[in-house]
Image (tube, rainbow, N blue to C red):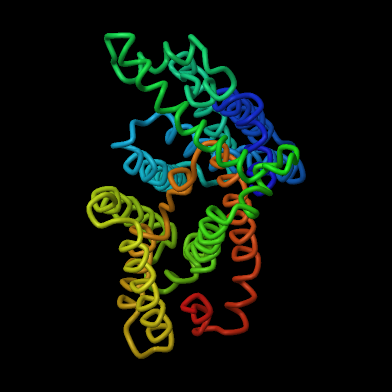
Amino acid sequence: GPLGAVLAGQWADQRGRRGALMITTWLFIFGGLVQALAPSLNIVIVARAIIGVASGASTVLVPIYLGELAPPSLRGVMGTMTQFALVIGILVADLVGFVLANPTGWRYMFFLTSAMAIFQLLLTPFLLESPRWLLGRNASSNKARFIIKKLRGFRYDEEVETEVEHYLGASKSQSCNDSNDNSGGSSAKNPMLEMFQDKKVRLLVISTLVMQVASQFSGINAVFYYSGLFFDGVIENPLVGTTLMGAINVLATYVALLLMDKCGRRTLIMWSSAGMFVSCIVIVIALNGYFSDMVALGAVASYVCFFEIGLGPIPVSQMFEGKYVAPAMSISCQLNWACNFFVGLFFPYINKSLGAYSFSPFAI
């Protein structure tokens, strides 16, 4: 995951948003085929690593792509739609597990990775390049103007040129700021370094990174990775409990989709954090036997719901302008995947050491 996030920023800037997405599509196809046909567990691990790179890159590229194609009035909704599609995919994977997670069907389940990527490959004729990226490379790009006209449904060239000026205006504004900052004659800097050196952007970068850490260290993936631990003794088949959490995840994300532009991101993040804190406390109390198992299950469901209305769909691609979008998404996703890895790796040890208090660190 983190490696894919590192590479995605470079691919997006060098090959374009569409070109970078094509790379991830082929990685999914290849990794899925290797995984389905693997003769040994070691080959499965290699295939999973390939798919992990593609997954990490996708988490960077898709929000950037949608954010640059969507009109300003829909960028908030489109950003949350990325998270919505993600949780729907998790739910579908849980449902597929009922049928194929067995000694005879696992290869077919792994092949679904390639099947979905092949389906995406068939749809690539409808995958347009980002006009912002095209205009950034060539302000006179006719292809960018054609794409803008097609996306916005414009009938007249004057409307297209107005939209082009909006794109170029933002770029020129940033160029002027960069020129003033580098008036001493210094050479162009790396956008990643500039984000931390620019006082106007630095606080935003730090805030974004803190939110990414909070998103994973809240323990949300501990719930999904080790959900069997919570449902053991409560539900006969732990897979049913996992699927139930997946369904709640989808519903909560849909609610976030409705609330995003009405309540504002900051308000939702504050409510999300407060709700998850209270849910963690209830989970710990219930696991200590003061409440019934069903209350613990309800607290876990509440925990997932509050995560998805705030800390889940963090709109990083909408928080930065122009040249900072790709590096900001890249470093944010790198940190997100790294924290995800540590939570998944160490939670079993935390659970073994703390027992019923294993969710206490996440409340902090």
